[in-house]
Amino acid sequence: MVGLKVGPIFYKIGTGDFLHNFFSSIAYNLEDNNWGEKFPFIMKELYTKELSVEDIPEAVKEINLIREMFKEYAPNCVIWDIENLEKRPPWGDDIAGRITSLSNYFYTSDGEDLFETFLKALDTAAKVKKVLTIKSL
Image (cartoon, rainbow, N blue to C red; front, top):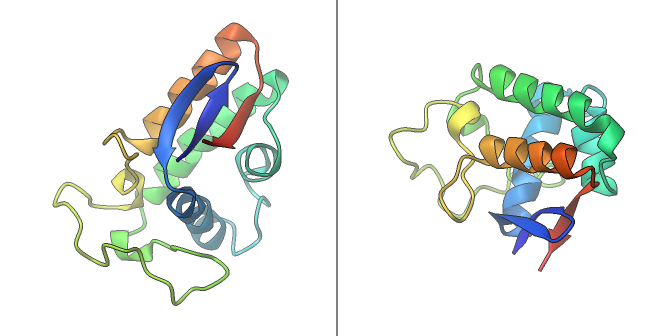
């Protein structure tokens, strides 16, 4: 189980593969396969180490922009693994009818919208003035 951690607070996401899928889809579809080029705070700072309190406002802007841009991408544009573009999600194309684009494709293992989970974690980190990290339990 991986998630977003702010101090002692843990926001569950799901498997490491699922989270990598989210980041792979961003890099491939929105950054022309150049990881972190357009979204450095989410794709470089948060993904590779930690997001500082000072960078939270920029990360919020990035998450909101990613969600908005993903509205233009059909669900079949999902990238499960940027290192292996042939790899497909375990569920294949069998997705819920409510999923109409990549903007509403990603749900946590608890059924929460992944973008909302990111925004909650970012908001909490800003309020308690703690770094945000990706952690595996």
